[in-house]
Image 1 (tube, rainbow, N blue to C red):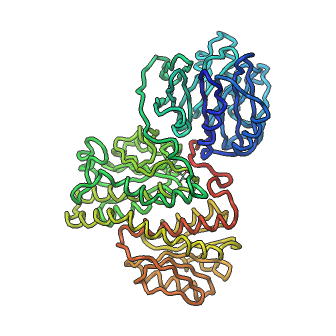
Image 2 (cartoon, helix red, strand yellow):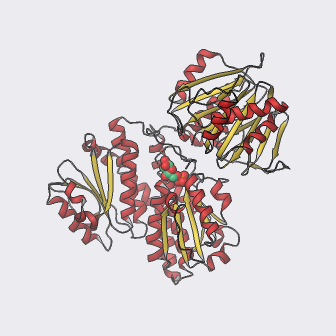
Amino acid sequence: MCGIVGAVAQRDVVPILLEGLRRLEYRGYDSAGMVVIDGGSADLRRVRRRGKIVELEQGLSGAALNGPIGIAHTRWATHGEPSEANAHPHICRQTVALVHNGIIENYEELRTQQRTAGFEFTSDTDTEVIVHQIYHYLEQHNNLLAAVQNALEDLKGAYALGVISARKPDHLVAARRGSPLVIGIGIGEYFIASDVAALLPVTQRFIFLEEGDIAELTREGVTIYDARGRRVERPIRENKLRADAIERGEFRHYMLKEIFEQPRAIAETLEGRISEQRVLDEAFGPKAGEILDKIQSVLILACGTSYHAGMVGRYWLESIANIPCQVEIASEFRYRRPVVTPDTLVVTLSQSGETADTIAALKEAQRLGFGPSLSICNVPESSLVRESDLVLMTRAGPEIGVASTKAFTAQLTALLLLVIALGRRHGLAAGEEARLVFQLMLLPARVEQILQLSPAIEELSQQFAEIRNALFLGRGTHYPIAMEGALKLKEISYIHAEAYPAGELKHGPLALVDADMPVIAVAPNDQVLEKLKSNLQEVRARGGQLYVFADQAAEVKSGPGMKVLEMQPVEDETAPLIYTIPLQLLAYHVAVIKGTDVDQPRNLAKSVTVE
Ligand code: G6P
């Protein structure tokens, strides 16, 4: 989390840094800051503010900051509360300024050493030790690059960082280990950022630094060194994304825009991956066919919304592809001792491809000796993509709203492609494959149709304005969908919401049901519909208020204590994607009524690159 951006140019870099920060705000937004080296005096000039980028912008307007080289940061606090003193950039003795994304694990030890050496601390962050350490080495040999290299050898933990110094007013040094960092290539100007999106207004050419790389940027060019200090060349890649791909357009919030982009996200995720009613093995990368042939089981690792997609994936893999599947929250998997099963495909699901726990879980699975890995991811060139043997990109486009929506349904689409590709190796008949592929092709139009429910759901959401708790119910593949609905509601409306498999209601949560506890259920017309209906009756009999999204043919009708919103009939396999949409819309409209910050809910961040 945290976003960093830096630039070395001939022109004033303040507007470039500010726009970069705006585009990175999704990574964290509790405080922000910027340092530029003044073009005339070569002094470090800094402005920091607690709060969002708009606060920094106001601070900058009074400060007349201006200069050809600078670094900037938007923060998601880990060590030290959100405050101006803890905001980056951190400066040591008016000489070195630094922005950092990540966590330094041995900062307490370094702090003690540095205090003894006479350094003063002005923040509670783990970051400040880095800038002191760089200063310490800079004093020894007056070489910024070498000082950063030396300092990094003393650090344990994860970082992406940008450093400038009044002693070298035309140099910007950047480094990454464990946190993302890209270099943007302009004409006679160079940039760094946590994400390409930050730099799209100034360039479409990027170098993706590798683990342990350190780069030195001047107006003349970029020189990169690997972790062992050897000079290396990294390829320059063109990014086709347009700068306006991350603009909000006519929509009031990114989240709403992204909900409405789902038909396209699904269609693009399918494009080129299906031919003549078959899923192409090549969709997963070169040699995918041979790799998939050997797979006997699947292990899915993910966090947050991506984990919910993984849970749906497990139902599908077992029922459609006839393959055993485990799915686990990455932060749990990485610290337990699982039994290693050979020929297991390790599937990581991630919107960002930079979630620290998911990356660590994948590495742990590789270390333990599980089988090959597949990343289902929305960001090309991200760490997970680069660490994996096979890749299936979800093509949802940039997702800015912190609460994930289109990335989720694109992940479900990608998972179905995987399920089919593995399934035909484990007894899925060609006719069944063709039927499933046909369903996939119908999905974009079906989702488009369901989006038309938005006004009806907006009306329904009025009834949630005053509630404090909510219960979500589903069964089978729709249990994870209920979990996703509950997560959406709590993330953006701050209403406490829990999800249960409907059959589990009677084992505890039923005790909570009364007129103040709305119960939201998804009721597709599947094999567990009748069971679910009985569970709904259990709620009704106890005076609970039900809101049910039900298949038209399910014979679930509105009545006292039960409000039903009817859904078009849909096949079992693709129903989870369809039933996700009304729950996303419900959370969105409730949050709007409650007046919360929909796109940037409190305390959260989009990309969690720390443990
Ligand atoms: C954060 C985001 C969630 C996301 C989760 C996993 O918590 O706020 O929306 O689901 O990280 O992120 P990933 O990028 O790995 O899917």
